[in-house]
Structure formats: structure tokens, C-alpha cells
Image 1 (cartoon, rainbow, N blue to C red):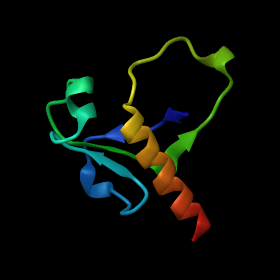
Image 2 (image 1 turned 90 degrees about the horizontal axis):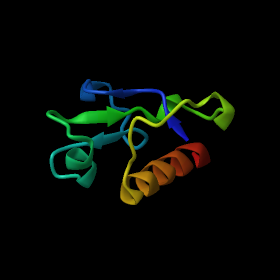
Image 3 (image 1 turned 45 degrees about the vertical axis):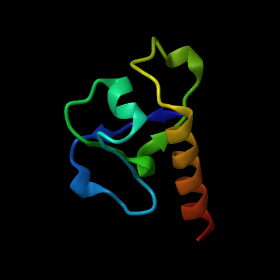
Length: 77
């Protein structure tokens, strides 16, 4: 799963779908953030690994579960 949009524009959050990462989240330190950000789940996409040159970072298992949960709930509405 790739994240097409990770932004500091947390005002764009779609409640219940996107994930906001704040200083209280483990990923905040992991990513070395200076400000809260939003993972725009509505912009997720998948591509073949042959097109990926490298990784820019990782998310915690907790954030990954949150993203999958939010997406599942959203799709079942």
C-alpha cells in the first residue's frame, strides 16, 4: 500500500477515513515530524513492486491497522 498524499494540511481531513498523525502518535517521532500531518486514505493506490525504486519511510503497525479499519468501515457504508 502506498500513500499518495501525506500532508500537513490537516484541515482537509475526511473524518472517519483519513488518519491524522499528531505528536502523541508513535509515527510522529518515527517520521521525525515537526508538525501534525494527515494521511489521505482516499488517495491510496497500489502499483507493482517493479516500479518502486525505494522506500521513503515506514508506518507503525498501529497506524497501518487504523488505516485499514477506516477504509473498511468507509467502504461498507
